[in-house]
Image (cartoon, rainbow, N blue to C red; front, side, top):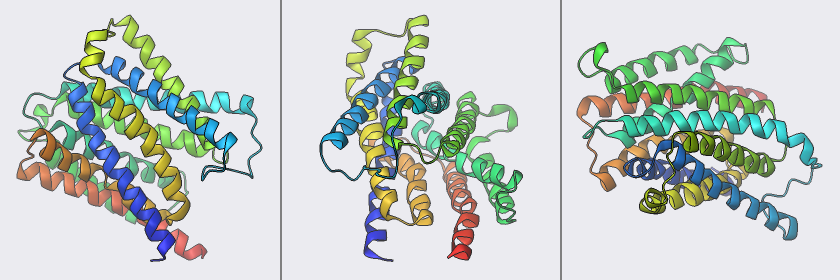
Length: 306
């Protein structure tokens, strides 16, 4: 592994760690603040962070410069709004799901593994539209279904947590998020990111106002988790992702970021004392393996093109 690839991969492992521990922040925030109010405030902070990066990029040399892109801000509004709308849906189902887990459930770990299923969903869609015809995708689907069964079904199909269903829907929404981003490849990533965070914050804020979720007391109680989710998980995590993907090969990058679910489970155990039973651990690991397998066709295609 070349030194630049190794550097990029290590940066993306750090991104996975930041995002994985972000599930702990979300779990803790659910004890103090409504889901929409939490997402509104975290995305508002993320918007400010990315706008700061844009200002820095325009005044000083930075790793985010995209000299090949001739920026036309007006052309970014609609794509940014669509991406932000998809982000809003994914984050909403994710946070509502985390809040819906009963006491004693390993919310951070379960949510982390189930959210990561979006990678398998993306691979299935790529297979369905003919972007790849590898039979390996079907292996990934089978392994994923077995893992989800072990993770979610403890006492029969009628006893699956509502929260698990919400996290699966969340994975579908993040699949949509990935597809919309893919549709607008080549545009300025920082500008799109600022617009998407602002859109997600605005939409979540509207729902929070309608549902009367805004309370300054609750926001202050959840302030540490909001700051972590907004600045560290969204702001710093996104920034490091951009830097890491400039150096890491695509396959190494995908696998590194897939560790997010594993870090979520570990962080839930270490920080929140959330313990997954043996069946859940095996199920979560199978989901993780399925996520890795789902990325094999892209790796093989990349090797063929070289």
